[in-house]
Image (cartoon, rainbow, N blue to C red; front, top):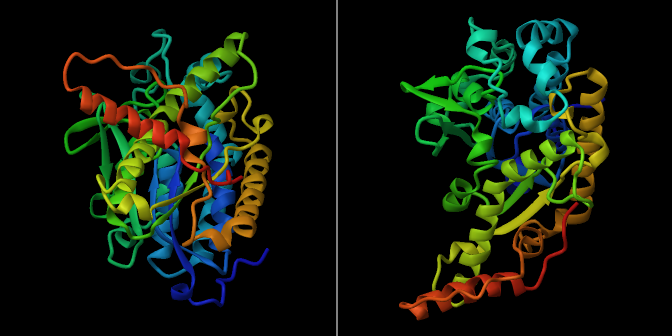
Length: 376
């Protein structure tokens, strides 16, 4: 496998922002996507936003890119993901998390619901987190905080307020990454600045607004892990729990995409921020359903991680081949068709009817905008 940096100068490549969703072991799919993008001769990563596994992937990349090496980023990603698949790490995980994994491994409910019978404060009183050493081995936080690193935004959820907090390069630490990946049914809350934090996926999975506001790159590629739709109503308990998880962990992304659609409709009439007209959204993912069956977000076997990586790398290469020429030119993600339900309620207002009508019009326009080709 050739991991040499491309000979093409970075300045000649098209800048993109990457928004990386979390999803436990499904983050190996993102590893594959990043593998393809980092090997590309046409694209340059200008900034990143990530949550949970997406935050760890983003930090590994930002750390290596600060030193000017896409090749090192690819090597570090591979080392991290294959490292957490080592039997020694898996055995430690079973010892620490055994009661919880047996109760929840059949469902993405691991990310959502605790049975109340086992608390990480009781099952894991020493608060052992195998990710700490793995992250420390692959992320140089001094490099991330340097001026040479691409902008990095990581989302965490404040346990007390329920609000998202987005943390950037200057305040990036190992505890920030651990907090962004802190599943409350498995780990004790992580303290940052004296406040407890849980997994960022509850409030921003991933967060888009910092990349939109800075305008460092007008093309943002979302690497989505959590599926949008199911073909049939789930009936089995594990399938129901998984679908609940998918809806909850996609909800913040759906909300941000709907806001983009509404603001874009306003901007088209000269009433909203002009930057929304210049923004171009793209998407890679989600992975095929057969790779993300119930319980697979906790699967750390080497074979499963490599299958996800290979699928992600294939999807990344396909995106570059199909849409590389569109970067800097046009949007390839159909925001309205993917994230906005076209069926709108008739809103009755006793006062401020004009305001209500305008809001209705914005969402209606967002739903009826010409659709971009959906990226795969």
